[in-house]
Length: 165
Image (cartoon, rainbow, N blue to C red; front, side, top):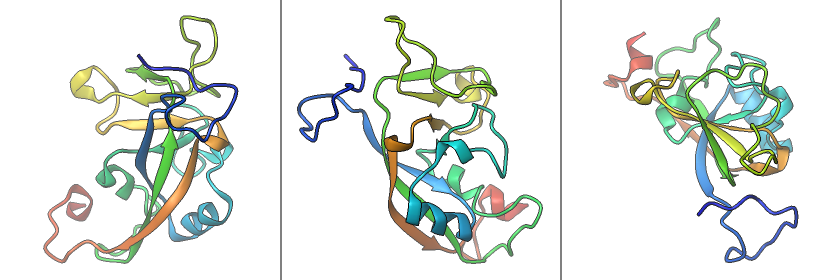
């Protein structure tokens, strides 16, 4: 049974099923620095790339999905340039699975009880969804924070989709 995030916040992990996960967020170095200092701001979600699921903080369980967003699509980095990615601690609470775009979303849809759910996750095309890699959207600033920043480079012999471009 998945529980809603309580209106009463609790530091007792046994009190609620917060549906907490470590997820990845890729962005340019300057945006990673800004998020590291001030946290995620869902109101800014989609500013640089688009907002297929509304204005939200976009996270992914796969680093390869987040890697796509570590550079500007109009000003590509050299293939083996240094990049940064955030590992975020995120509380999904009771989550809504979507298989359709939600471009105008400002919050998750309502659950059976008429109250908004806590997050949205977009399923992949293979399961009837509209994305290639699973994505998680959070619409509340307090649902995720940057736990760590990873600095990395793609190996010279890398055969990933991004290096193949």
